[in-house]
Length: 118
Image (cartoon, rainbow, N blue to C red; front, side, top):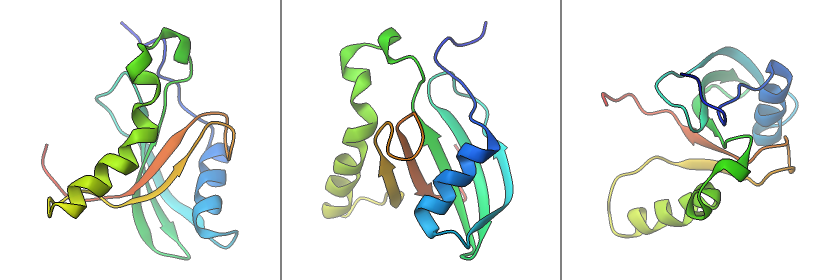
């Protein structure tokens, strides 16, 4: 069964996200969709200028299908991550939170990639 809220973005949209984060000289050297979710659409990306490894989580396309608390979860994540850091709890570094329409037509988060085992 497929998800009615999960939707991939185009490579052009992914490039817009990276260039908005790092500037026009940045480029994507590798990217792939990460598997396992039916809610957010999540990408792994490697860049040059600067060299980085990222996870980009893009909110669901059709927010009308979400519960009210789900509609604001992504915008609350930077606040939550800061609370964790302020209490000495290790967490990922959020590089960018973008509300809907600022760069692409969906809200998204860019975080540093961490090698880990779920």
